[in-house]
Length: 376
Ligand code: GLY
Image 1 (cartoon, protein in one colour):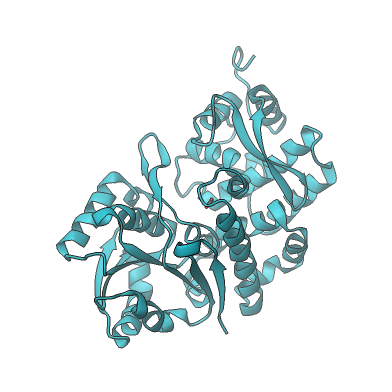
Image 2: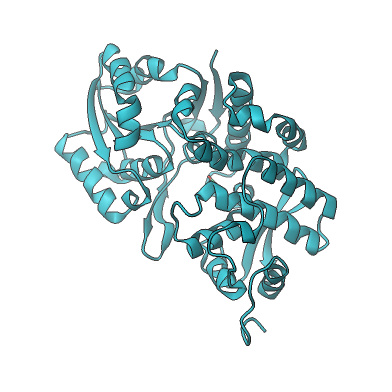
């Protein structure tokens, strides 16, 4: 029932296993990695409350001693304080390099735990068990780990690949519809950036994926992970092609920064609007056909995700402020704005020299305000 997608990174290669019922198999699959037959499981209160007993039973059934490290849910946990807390608790458990740390949760838990594992005693092995759609198709795969600082999100971190990723599709049944849609934004991203056939399939199957119909969900997650694995294997440290995975993220991060990185606009929702904006900006620049931008927008909107600024709390946004957030984006090099733009549906590319003034004008055409004297 499950399938494995290999992430081909030589000595650090690992599998992403996708399927139903994987919590029950976690013990059997993780035990060979844990030399001392003990592991810490970092999770948040919500996920642990829903699924902690099932995971513990599976791990203990395979002869592993389980040490839960439970943290508060929410983005604020992905901080220096949260990192200090988790590493201190791992030290108190006297874990050493023969042990395993397991991240059991969404992107916050995965990013925080992965970073703690990267620096704990100069690096300890870790396993990802992602429990949100977004984490299953994006953040648990590829080894990007990080915490936020008051200056921005994901600004302190490390590349640290997991030894194994277990994406249990059954766990998504407890996810809210809104969280499903937010994760779906990253699924459609793979179609838009590099697989027109997948995009077309999603156009007709988005409702089935969002309704968690097993076959559709499995196909959507597996194709997304396959594409991510292929890109990461080719460009682990984001020297080139991996940046394509940031489609929609430059516009999206600016919107998140303006809305406070909270429940007003989830990351996936920001990326959804960001992808629609990236396609329409590409069309406005004459890079892709207007009908492709319209079709991308319709597919994103059809999944119940925002595609326009006026759908987002906080509108009207200030165009100059949005562009300033983009310029501070860690992907900006030497003052030039880097965007992932599109030539067509399924054909995105990295544009490193995007003119900030053109972006400002475009945002105004999208309904943002232009304050007088700014951006001229
Ligand atoms: N989420 C983008 C990446 O992993 O590169």
